[in-house]
Image (cartoon, rainbow, N blue to C red):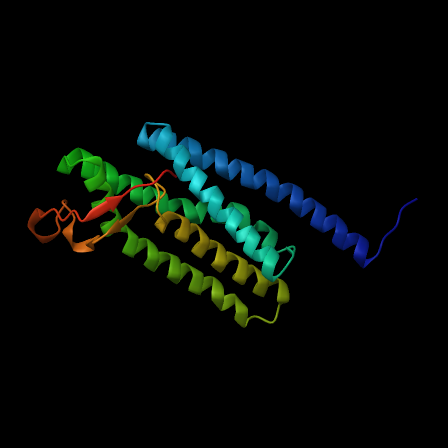
Amino acid sequence: MGITGKDVLDADETGVAQRDTTIAAAISAAGVTLLYFALFKEVVRPLLALATLVIGVCWSLGLTTLTIGHLNIFSIVFAPMLMGLGIDYGSYFIAHYEEEKRIAGVGTHEALVQTCGATCPGIATTSLTTAFTFGTLFLTDSKGIAELGFIGGSGILAVAAVRRGRGRVPGGCHAKNCDPGASSLGGRGGEHRLGNPRAAGA
């Protein structure tokens, strides 16, 4: 003997979606981490990249709790989606940092400043355009899809904000007088412009 009806079916679908999304998020995190280990051939920086990504996802969950207050059958998939989209920012930062250290031969602080100046404008631009794309979902008549647009857009901005905040590679950097055009890998004739760099723990 069992029960049926719209509410029961909705509860069953939500339960299955929660279970599958949790599995998908775990697989995404593991896959991204292993891929980082293979590509960058180290452990510490990939783990820091994943840590900042998880912080961004947590910020997004907190903002969703304060605003919408719930997840629906559409927006519940945002966590594995952010894992794939948000990890790109760490890839840009780490790759450019490695180039500064290996090719330009600069010190750690200067490499952080040059990397921040070269990558942060691009990260900000891509995060804004991606968030804007999610924002177009507000134009739909479906409440669930509109909520997905808000959660996805705010999540992308949260992940980018964590990357941009003060932190050790790859969490980002905070430097006064950080000149995007002064990268030692081709900016202004290879001129180094090191202002007052400050690197804090991730």
